[in-house]
Structure formats: C-alpha cells, structure tokens
Image 1 (cartoon, helix red, strand yellow):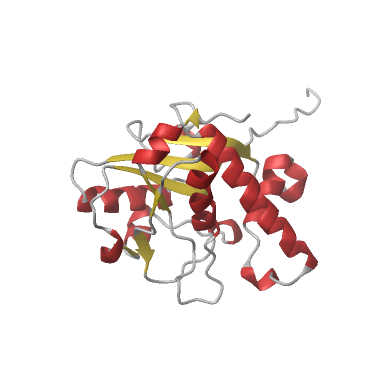
Image 2 (cartoon, helix red, strand yellow):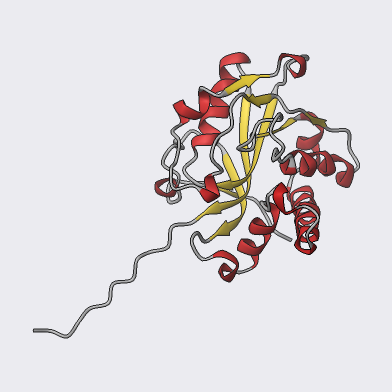
Length: 216
C-alpha cells in the first residue's frame, strides 16, 4: 500500500513556491519530459490527465481506470477520521466550467474517497476559476501564484458552513503555484483554518549527469 510522504526541506527546491510552513503530502513521484517511458506513475498521471477531446476514443477507458485507481490509493492512504471531519477541495483545473474541455477528474476522485472508506464526506468545489489558463503539463509557461490568484474566487454557495480543516487536492505538484494561490485564497476567507495540500504525485527534477571527456 502506498503511503503519503511529506514535502520536506529536501524537496522544496523542486517546488519553489512552497514554504517550510506548508503542510503538503504526496503519494508518488513523476519524472517530467519522458512521457509513458517514465514508469507506472507517469502512465497513471498521463492517463488521468487525458483531455476531454479524446473522449469516445478507445484510449478513453484508461482515464476512467486512472480515476478509479487514484481514488482507491488515496482512500487507503488517508486517515479515515481525518476524511470524516475535513473538507475535501479540488484545486481547479486549467479550464473554467463554461469550457467544453472542463475536466472534473479530481472532483470525481474526491467523491469516491469517503464512499470507499465508509464514512460521510464533505466534498466541495470551494474554489472557482474565472478564466481559462494553459494546462501546466502542455505549456512552457509557468504562472506565478499571483497570476493564478487573480483568477480564483470562493464559491459563496459552497462556503457555508465554514470549513475548519481543508484538504486541497491536485494530481501533480510542480512549482507549487496552484497550491499557493488556492491556499492563500482560502486562508484569506476563513480565518484560523488548517490547510493540507495532498497530491497524487510530485514532479521530481532529475539530476543532470555530466560526462567528462578525456583529460587534456
């Protein structure tokens, strides 16, 4: 069974928008730039992120399998008592709900977790994105937390009752910009709240191997 690991001081250089005070956890590690050849985690994340433009193709079934697998892994790794008292919140995807390519994959995962654990759960799409952004995994640009925060608002219809503990969930932790923007927004709205970031995988930055030539 996979266990959640904490993003610690050794990991922070890979996720430079996170701070030592952030409480972020991850299940797996993802190798960027190598696609499916990166192994099981890369396969899982790539299938999970399949865009809705591929719906109806034979490959689409792998997305459904990935959603189910991630829900099962998180349900096994998360403390049942914590799930029963926390508010589970997906970090918004790159597209707004008005876009035909809007993908609620993480929301689907979160709704399965309490059911798999046999507890009552509080799943809310508390944060709404107001403008489409480039998907991080297909773009060379990396928005800052301030740029992300400018497009995030709290959904007032989901804000009552005020949550006490929030788990912010996302599939892949890269720079930490999305988490930083979402966490700051929630903290600004709900004073004294506890926030935990939970990620299916964190991106690792492989060390560069240097090949030394013959001595001159």
